[in-house]
Length: 78
Ligand SMILES: [Zn+2]
Image (cartoon, rainbow, N blue to C red):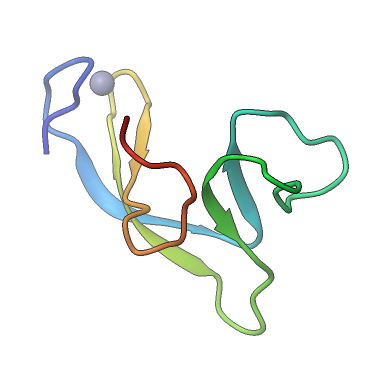
């Protein structure tokens, strides 16, 4: 995949993490989405191995793209 910003080839790998949340709001204390809060990705605690999301890294602009298509989201295309 080419970087959508730089147009150079990105490196494929895995974004490996524990709890994570992609939301339009900053959270100071918790990584759980609030009641009715829109979220694109909400990863809970793991018992053993970390979450492993397919991902691409641009070595020039250092942006990382994540494929969250296998995870729950409550945001739909407009
Ligand atoms: Zn780039």
